[in-house]
Image 1: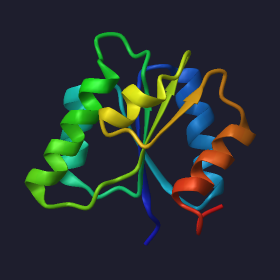
Image 2: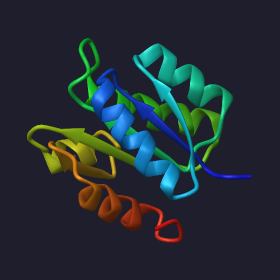
Image 3: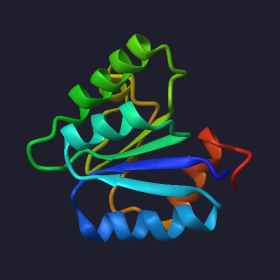
Image 4: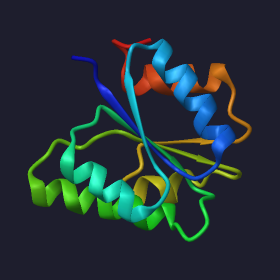
Length: 124
């Protein structure tokens, strides 16, 4: 069974780009467009990696990162790596909220590959 990746965000162009590239690594992809949907997916499934667009309207990416970490602790799950995608990454704020890695927009295939290989080296 292939590992799953969760993409959180409502930017269709970014999501389409991520889906196409992630599938090249042999990973399954699921998408959530808001916080509630993301938490529902996390409650029902296990993921190897989470991508989160920090510029999703109505979504505080830092708060969601913290919520995911609290939820994982509550459900006794292992910490799933989270990659935040944003205009101006704030590394320290990302790390404080439980996000493992921040990458800047515009996203390229090379940035994506480098990020995935850091967190899932056996996949790239």
